[in-house]
Length: 160
Figure 1 (cartoon, rainbow, N blue to C red):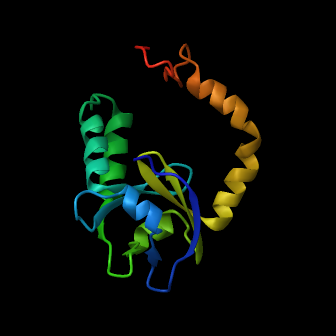
Figure 2 (figure 1 turned 90 degrees about the vertical axis):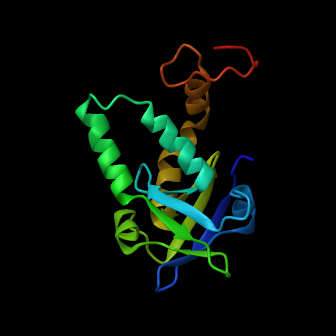
Figure 3 (figure 1 turned 30 degrees about the vertical axis):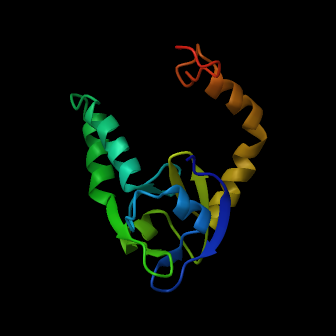
């Protein structure tokens, strides 16, 4: 099930954040109440189900560690990634170092991004939208262009 939607939430003083029901349901890995929280891009955090994180880890395991950029990414990513528990109130506690890394304040936005959820500081998300929303059509064309190194999606279902 693809994770979708935008949800505004507040983080309490103990850095606890309620996960919306629709997103919790999208994360269902049996009855597990554990998720993985990791650094994301553009200053957000990424939240994965256990299966989603393992799928990402499998993809990363196939990348050659012969290049220093790959090794540095793996070090930075995995040293910051952390397993978090969903409590009885459907909240997770964001580790202080990750909250600081993403500059999370009191008001945050959770967005579904296919296989994970991104957690953004509300002000940073609004800035991202202001800078990028007008480019949606161009980004769509780029993402779906089979000849582009960025794209590669073939919507007809055939091999690309």
